[in-house]
Image (cartoon, rainbow, N blue to C red; front, side, top):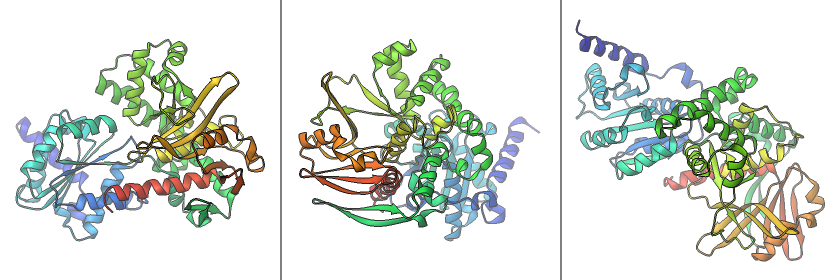
Length: 486
């Protein structure tokens, strides 16, 4: 048997293994038993959309459930009456597919199924497409050539994938970002949503839907659990992984990104240097940084640091948050900024789990709350920090800017204590910022306390940090639905 014929036979065998529904009529029990991400209801309509001839690109960091979402989508198609023989799944990272064009794989699958590649209405899923060089050129050509086929692709190098999608797939690709679990999703996957009670918060100037809980001890325990383990679906459901998060999170997520993905994408030669920079950032997530201080502490040149930070952002491991001053104006020279992990459980993988009373809990609560904001498209969130002289300085943790007016719409001070509920006048920086920017209301998080404190023509809304993370996570998913017209 000739080599080409043997290779083709092996590829066909692999396709049959990866597409069990061709014979059984359903995806495997392993995937069907998994609880779906709440983003599935947003993603599926994009796959069904044939009115616009576009491929759907599912992007996101490693292990957030992209492959599982593909299989849940395939099962939804089958449940809705699409023939299982009209659905093809191809994992591009499979070694046997190395250096084989996407079109060849598609045509070979159609040959197995006795389908016409150009005539039959097919759904084709390419998983982990970033492993194929110039995938965007090939995929665009497929979209143009096969008008009856809906192509769906996934990839883990989120920002690089999006850059190539924007550059080569203009008008042919629709991007969909799947973030790590929000706290809202985490609570629903753990089946604790019944302890949350929605109510309408009303102040002198606005009304807003928020939540309280009739069991704050349980909710706070779940929140700390989310901070330590909650970003990734597999960790939520596996006690084995939770007992050894370093093995799963560090080796399967962090190390693969730092040691394989980023070096191959950007030609990084000193991976140890990149790894040490990320470790330093992870330990101090939520702190204010400058390239000057980072360079002194790490011994890495500032220009190299800028590249590393942009690469880590591209891999969706960190998020840089820009600074404004006391008048919510951007600094002309961006010398200082904050960096947050996109999910706090990354820190647990590198170091150790935290408890409610640990010294680091404040920064991790802040990181967890920023993690609810980061997935939003065009979320213009900053922090305010100013210094007039050594005695007059201050900071506000989150500021939502109105770019058109160059004014803040809202402000949030993140605290992991109930102290300020009893002593709101001690929130000097927040009250100063509100006065400077004519803000009538601001929000302050606590551990357990909730309520509105009216003082000197302003209102401070106190809400437990876990409840605030929950409502921001819910609104992030709602915003995603709205952005896709759902």
